Image 1 (cartoon, rainbow, N blue to C red):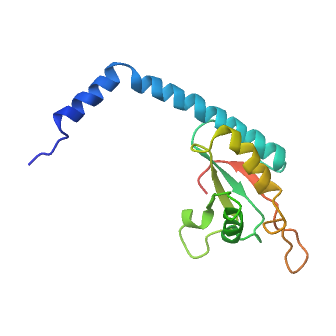
Image 2 (image 1 turned 120 degrees about the vertical axis):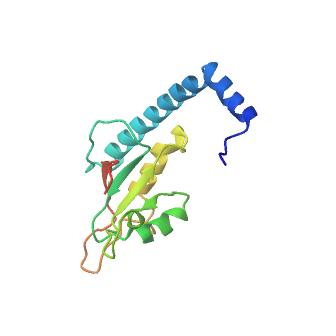
Image 3 (image 1 turned 90 degrees about the vertical axis):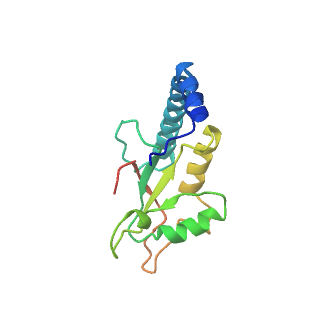
Length: 151
């Protein structure tokens, strides 16, 4: 037996496409994401001056590398308590020795006016987030930014 979507659903989609709404939506999203991508890149360059930028548009997030001694799971817990959310990297790697010093900063669902303050807060957070100092005195709270790439 072959299953297909109901005819009324097919008709709605056909109408949506034929009236140009899909193209309009696609162009609007592209402009919005490009503006957010540019603002995220500018904010990372300003507040994380060690960042690496490859000028290419695509994707909806930046990968940010921090010192190897920084556990981004702990940073996530502390940042989340202040309303800053990101994805720690260990879930994107396979194996027991997955690096824990990368974060993924998404921007597709973040309003434009909240991107710069969020990056600023993450880069120069309150003392209970970072910079932190390891037992041997090394500063471990400084992040390094790189554009989205699969680790």
